[in-house]
Image 1 (cartoon, rainbow, N blue to C red):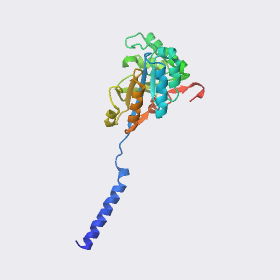
Image 2: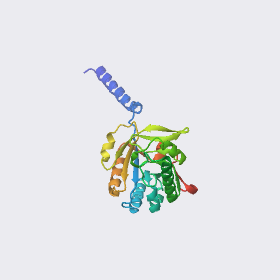
Image 3: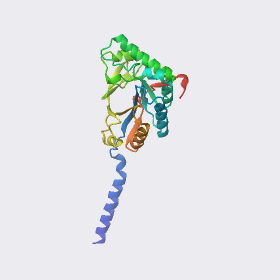
Image 4: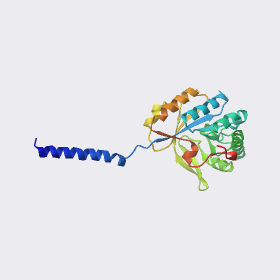
Length: 241
């Protein structure tokens, strides 16, 4: 091989390597999967210890989650709410975990308002997020939420709703039962909508701890409801953290 040819090949290699080094920052980067951990507490099983253990696990993992509690549970186990309100979003589930669909408007309003008041009093907070029992609502829901001081609604499997410019606006999302799917399942999901992963207080804390640990090793961005919405949905009375 002639020296000129060797020189040309060497020059080409240098150019190619240079291009490969320079190009990556300009290539499309994989977006992290926006993920929210939801914990739903509507029965007394394992309480209040489950709440304390969950709070400790979330603190250890440095994860902020979103917890929904019925008013009845908040009254019976107020320390569940106050403990979990330290670093997490707290939402209400009505007072009695009542299916709101088909109820009189006055009944719906009383259930939602009394549920929020019970949660707020237990946690010394102003909670402004909600989830309907069984994921079922009717055409009254947004009027009821507005009159109850609630600005974020996570009642459904395929959307969440944010109060914006004097009305509730729909945003796409997708919801999964964390007990049915391993953390590996979520690494291959499309990243175009937020993913809500749900657990209840029948789930062993060790399982939740392991799930979070594995999930954090994936390409995910773990948020709470306030971070997703872009507004503080759990305000502490007296400015406490």
